[in-house]
Image 1 (spheres, helix red, strand yellow):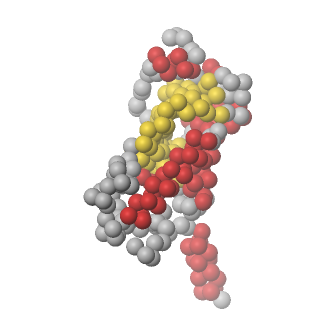
Image 2 (cartoon, helix red, strand yellow):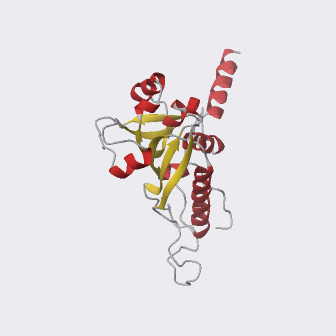
Image 3 (tube, helix red, strand yellow):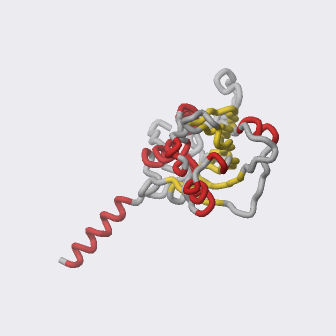
Length: 225
């Protein structure tokens, strides 16, 4: 009975931990699937009030970690003063303090994005400032009491699985069938956004780089490849 009980615990624990993803195979269909997933997440982020909430849902939907919670790995010993343009967008003068926070937003072992965040501590409560300075709480969760929303001011695609002109050129360099692992660079796309509180006052500017680990789950099955 004891052995059966232990085996049952092992089976239950194994079921709750997502399996490690195999590398994506290179092939035309796989590249289309990767592009569709990137564009899906990109569109969700552009339409969202919170990048943290969107990434947490992405992690849960694709069973990338158990539990699928986003946390911020703080990267210390790095300082980037805000530019004049950032101060203008935040509506602060040259003398008003603006703090900088660099983090990796991770779900389990997957670093989904790397973010630079310039925020105005004078527009946040003591509790929020303390959480940002001493914990791994993502910015979006820390300022949730402010009912924040964001406005994206710039978006850049850093990589496309398909080369320019693939849809019109018969000579595009695309493998017709799977041929080993798909080579995916670290940076996939970037967002720059201003985050506002419910009173429409800007509280931060963020620059986010979304990484290849957003695709770190088994590729959709494609038996016809």
